[in-house]
Image (tube, rainbow, N blue to C red; front, top):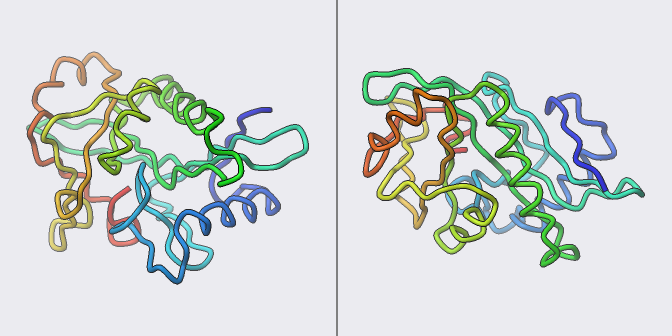
Length: 202
């Protein structure tokens, strides 16, 4: 069993097809799944072979067994954000999913913890994303921390898409010295993520 990482558009076709199948299990296209109703850890893909906005430098991270079966997957998105008068290099989790047949074995936790370490080592100031409230303890078990009262504002400045429209909590890891110094400024704050109109909220 191993974790593999690809630039989204360079993910091998056979692995990409498996990931899309897992995502369809979690967010059935006929259920209208989207960023508005995702199952946690960022936006669900909705119908079809959706790609992330290339401006967000999307990366696919997959847990694959020795037979080449994708057990779990997630995407990492990146952008510079402005918060409290400062710039921060931010990365977030999106489309976190474990195959129905493989749940309850710690695979998702292993992948999410690996993503956290990858972000920490990447030079990003922080990792930050939203998840469904009932998944808070899952992400905490993988090393992420709750940011009490924080709201991520997605979309664009002209067409904002705030996470408090839904029953979400904000999770984060503060990695750089600058981010750690200003951790408290994120508590209870509205954080302008603004990833655009393709990925309205990662």
